Image 1 (cartoon, rainbow, N blue to C red):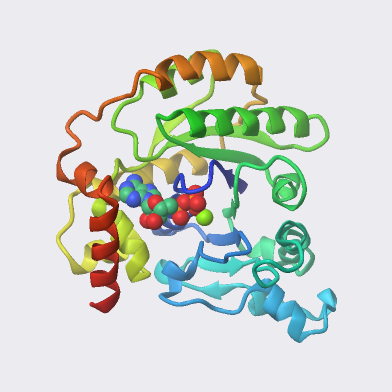
Image 2 (image 1 turned 90 degrees about the vertical axis):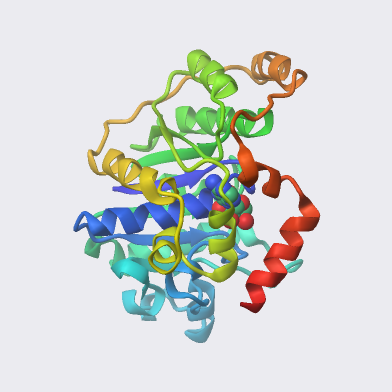
Length: 300
Ligand code: ADP
Ligand code: MG
C-alpha cells in the first residue's frame, strides 16, 4: 500500500509518519517511509542523523535517474524501517515543489517499491497543486493528519477536495483522518459529520513526543530508554492495523470553502478549552519553556 500523508504544516505529519511504520514493521511488514519535504526532516529520527537525500544521490550521478539503485536512495533505520528523503534545492533557491514531484518518481523507476508492503510518503503542507500534489498520483491512499482546530480542519477539507478530484483519474482514495494532539473532538466531529470519513487517533499533546524529535528518536526508541506515559506509542499499532487492513477508502465529497469557513469558525470564535491537559498542555503552551527545554535536550 502506498499512502500519501498530508495536512496543515506543523500538524504532526512527520511525527505520525515516522512512528506508524515502526508499528507496522513490528507486525512483520516491510515498510519504507519517504519524506517528501525539501527540508528533509521526516526520517532522520529513524537513523538518528540525516542520510543523503534523493536529490543528493541524483546530483552525484549527474541526474541520470537510470544510474540510481534502490539502495542509493533507501537507507535502513530504526526497527528495520526503510527511509528515503526527497530533499530539494538550498532554501530560497530553485523550486522545492518541483524537486518533490521529480523525486516521487524515482523509487518507482528504480523498482524500490516492490521490496515493501507499505510505503508512506510524508508530503509537505496542505497544498493541492504542483510538486506536493504529485506523490498522491502514485499512491493508493491519502491519509490526512488533523487536530481539533479551525486551520487544520480547513486544510483537511482542501485535501478532501483534491482526493475527490484526483480519484477521477487515479486509483487514489481517502483512508481518512488521524487526529493528532486532540484533547477534544467537537470540531473534528463536526467536520466529519459534514464530510464523512474514518477518524483514528494519534497521541494527545505530549511533551515526550516533542522531545523525541529534538533527540532524533522515534517515540518507540524513546520509550526503551526512559519512563514514558503509556499512551505515547499506544495509538500507532491501531493506526498501522487500519492501514494494513487495506481499506477500500473513499472518494470524499468536501464541503465548500465558504461552508467550511462559516461552520468551523463558529467554534473558532468560541475558543475550545483543553480538558485534563495537565502539565503537558501547559508546557506546550509556554513558548519560553519550550525553547529552554529544547536547548536543554539538545545538550543532553
Ligand atoms: P509536520 O510534519 O506536519 O509539519 P511535525 O510532525 O514535524 O509536523 O510536528 C511539528 C512539531 O510538533 C514537532 O516539533 C513535533 O515534535 C511536535 N508534535 C507533533 N505531534 C505532537 C504531539 N502529539 N505532542 C507533542 N508534540 C507534537
Ligand atoms: Mg513534516
